[in-house]
Length: 425
Image (tube, rainbow, N blue to C red; front, side, top):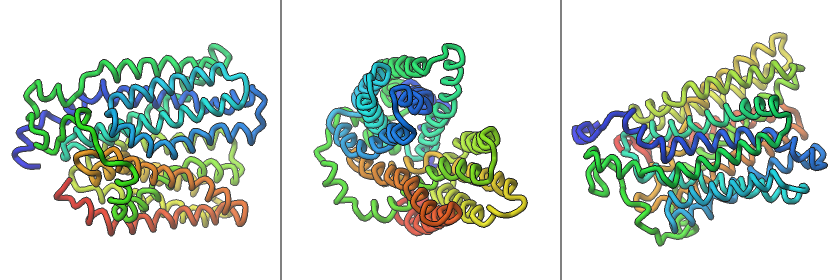
């Protein structure tokens, strides 16, 4: 870190604390709201007459909405700024929650789920653009890792809150009311929270220059004329070269959500054992989220993304050969632990790499394309797993997913030093 950066450095904890009211708090609240609602959406759908396939379709609507919402969200952020995009997304998601609560049939429930997914996409891109333009480079990975950890904490705790509400009140509507109430608090925080950049300038901890220390100020006051598809074409090289390994990492993350429970079922484990093993991986992921940011800021982005891909990809490839072994359950637990560690080490890396290569003046249109790529990797992976499992077997699907991860590691090893050399971190 340069002497100039050291002189301006208010301390990691103090800097990160400035982002709590505007970014981390709303992110945690959004994670809590989603984490409480999503597990109960199939239950709500079933109460409206859906069969298992229809209930699964209702849940998948949110995933599809996240994917298709990134490009419009990039355009919206470029037009009206991050704060108003987050506030509008929160209000519309609130309307979606009311739609879930009042839906008389599956059609309106699907529309409400679509609206929630679109708003989740817009909210995520707006906070990503906000952090990209306001965080100094020497803090960026840590700041974005905390952002990812905030959302993970919310998604981890949300289902437990929903379970407690269900146990006390005996109805799934309680989780929907929690979703609505939490979003009201989110919108209030976004609207009344002071811009951390302005607060740091007022305290004399950051200069007023728009480019000093890597902080680009006044994004909400500048309006980008760069359109989403123009930005996509202009930056097609980095999107194709660095974006594809990023999509592979996103796919590996999603694979652990589907593959690990499926593997447990294929071994004949009961629900409690599978939940415990998956819960261990979640705890490891959450425990390592800040370490990931420290590694990236200190040694460079490659030292987080490359070990993460190798660990997760190697674990899946190795797991595929253990299904019929006498100690298959022990191998499964070991692989799940390695996957959890690998995923924890990657916390915030996709947002950090996107911020690193985004155009300095107006990152939102580019980030819309970047997040579309990564979300596409996450959306395609469950389909890939289901297709290969149906045609061949689950171990074959596990090998393919693991190999994709290892190929993604090669892509990171080649292109991260090219587009994000450590000297720029």
